[in-house]
Image (cartoon, rainbow, N blue to C red; front, side, top):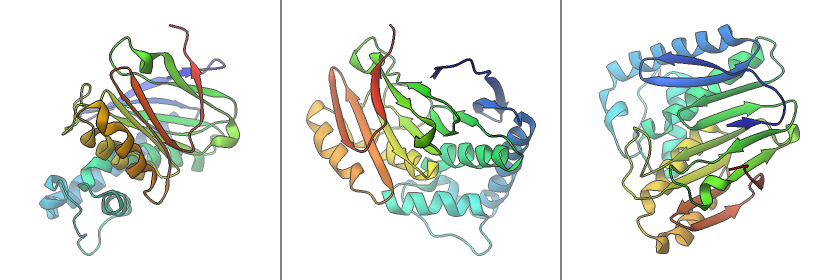
Length: 233
């Protein structure tokens, strides 16, 4: 992630998740991360299948809002609810910062970003290789936000992926939905022939603004994405 004006980012680690946060209300953001993670863990302890299923699953009575967000996203995309956890946590945390009075908040959770900006911000894309995808970035205006930009890969990161996609990035207003859809996009791409049908499928999901997929030297785009710019590599 790169910024067009000087921004201060701070790291926060909780359990296995590493967050990168830009927000004046840092303590409110981190406290919400801890709170929401505790709430979700308590729910999964009562409903083990929620944490293990790779397909959509129903909710038990009294499911907390964070689980409801994840389940809605999973049901719309066709994946397990945990495919939406990083995005859901990022958005919950960012919304807590806004409720605490912050005018700008950017929360990144392992490549899944939710932000409300007051000025231009550039989000660099990273595929883990010196290819075309690593020379691209999204340039967002404040009016583009609030927005979620979530990514998945078959080459990088700890999350399970069934495909061999270098990078799948999805843009949506709902971070849980963007996260789940990025996971599904990455799952669908094994060869460059999978790019076009994948971006068409993901872009057709209700609530998705746009999708970008990178495989080797090929990039597929669909929907309404923020402006693409070249990074200074």
